[in-house]
Image (tube, rainbow, N blue to C red; front, side, top):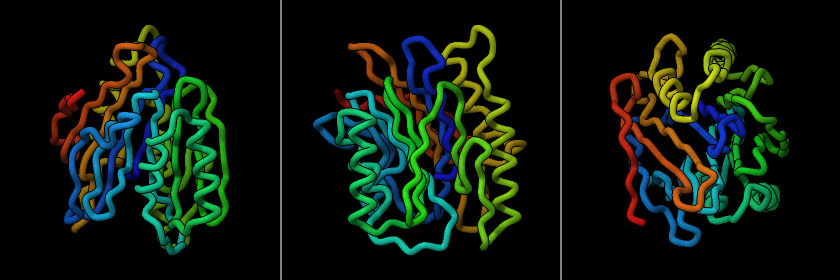
Amino acid sequence: MCTLLVAWQLFPDSPVVAAANRDEALGRPSEPPARFRAEPAAIAPRDSTAGGTWIGYNHEGVFVAITNRWIDREGGRSRGKLVADCLALPSATAAIDHVRASTSEETYAGFNLVVADADRAVLLEWDGELAVTAFDPGVHVVVNVGADGAFFEPEARPEVGRQQAANASALRTALEPEDGETASDWLDRAGEALGDHEYGVCVHGDGFGTRSASLIQLEDSEEVVGRYWFADGPPCRTEFERVEPDR
């Protein structure tokens, strides 16, 4: 995944609202969002190659998503399996503790990982060392070269990195909440922005591009923990459909 938008603690009864594009090799197989695990129940798509995932939430109200980080670092364990690990945990705090432990024991390629629940939202950046940044309430944008204005210039493709940083900053400005806007309203705007080529985050390349997009709304409710809409293709030309996993 290359672009992740998170609105944390902005909307009453919806502490975590997120929108994301996944950019990947066009030939890499994956499965659409479904019941990923039973206890705690988690909803997520699945990477058929490595068995992990890139985004999802569980019925404890924990949201997890990851982007690759553009650094020259070899990986061992799948980063998607780290996301899957976090979806098995009861809180953002437990997930953060697990990431700390796992990065001290396993080898991973670079990543930017967001974990959030109603009480805490954190960005964990891994480049051989783990940096942990707490999110304040607001809109946050995470891409391959950093988040929220704290971007780095990758050695391999500096011009692409600079453009991605500019796109992320433009998205963050455009998606600041409007007066009276609800979580659903914001998600509608976010979904449109993910497919708007003006922002440059819907990618079409030779053998690589935006494979799918996700919209997730976690509610502070005992009856409905989360809602998920999924576009199984680039959102510029693919409709979002409600995910209805078996309960």
